[in-house]
Length: 582
Image 1 (cartoon, rainbow, N blue to C red):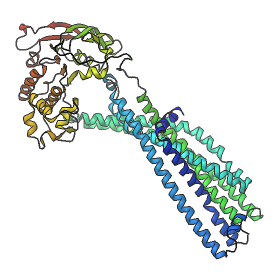
Image 2 (image 1 turned 90 degrees about the vertical axis):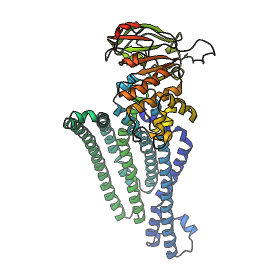
Image 3 (image 1 turned 90 degrees about the horizontal axis):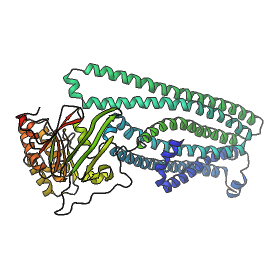
Image 4 (image 1 turned 180 degrees about the vertical axis):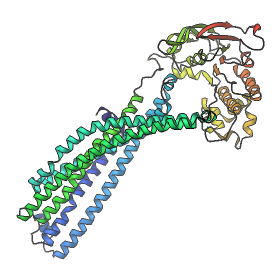
């Protein structure tokens, strides 16, 4: 219930539209309830001998039966058309409101995904996040349209029909309502079962999404090691589990519908028998019986809708809860309440970029530190090459600077300020990152370069590309700077992609530069061009560069050696290293 109420809050901005839908719903229900009356009048007063009710007798005084038949047939047509039009308008309005609420949920989920820390993403399967953001969010639209609108429609129809039916025949009304307790018991008993099985089924589907995403990402590895059969068998096991869990969910749903059908069948048989007896003894006219039978059909329709609502809300509530779990996840890295901004450096003043690590430690898992009590200082404009074996914490050290992680102990300072006392936006605006694997967006070359500086002029973009030695190959692309790159677009070599990443860093012109093995995947020719760009890019900036190649290390003013998460050497590059580091 809490998830349902919370989910419906996303539709509050559409309160005026919801009021309009409610009015259309009331008018549509009223028109639906009036539809059987012309037929009853035709049977009793036109085809039979019963006098017209006082209201109709007053307005149709002097009309022949042929005229009455025509008028009542026309009224039947108008009522059906009105009910159809009002119902269509009401449904369209409800769908539009449901989609607007879905959009709000997805916008909030996307904003939450953008705030996830790297550690949070590394601890979560990407496919599960995709499933929650894309598929589970549909639950909110379902809860509104099926949980609220359908429930309100069914409840209104049921209430109005019970009032009219009780005025026609209280005995038959009580017989019809005798099925309601059976329906409620079924909803209560089977609802929890369906909700639990629905949760298990959605978790299994989420794991399938994760596996598909991982397979696509690692397809070259799978094919090169001929592991297709093994991976297919593992996937078959997952789909088998998902099939079993979804089948269990639907099995309980079918048992639920069977219980509901039994209740409805019992009620229908009782009413037909009682109604037939009353017509035989003359206490009920044929026209009144037709009205009652018409209402009986309509009575079971909202009861059936209410029974569906139980299953629908149970399943959709599970999806909404999974979305709320994502939204409620606390921000691992967030601004402190009193966080301050970074004012631009004064002209001719002290340059920005002095960094200090003071007894900094970090662990992804408690008790398993990756970095241990790091202490060192870097002056503004210095460049530091970080070297060490794989897994010693080189990339983790870099990630502490833009606060992708926060230290588990110790302090990192920028120009004397604890990074945690600075606003995240301001801090990251002063840092440019060039990752080991070049990242391109599904956009044009110009848009990729200008990603860190919205509104950059074409001249600025071109100047950055020239500085990164990318201008020449860009001009050879089909549309030059307007060529679409990224997933599914123009193919670029790794070296070309990395030069676009460097151009992006040139254009951002941040005082701090973080380079994570930018030449590790490049051939000799591409490396020479990238290294030349790096030398220019590093000039005048505080730079941390994770590197293995001596050509890159020699560009740094100091070397920091990490072993088992500790600093074993920090200072100028030793002459004794010769052509390669130890």
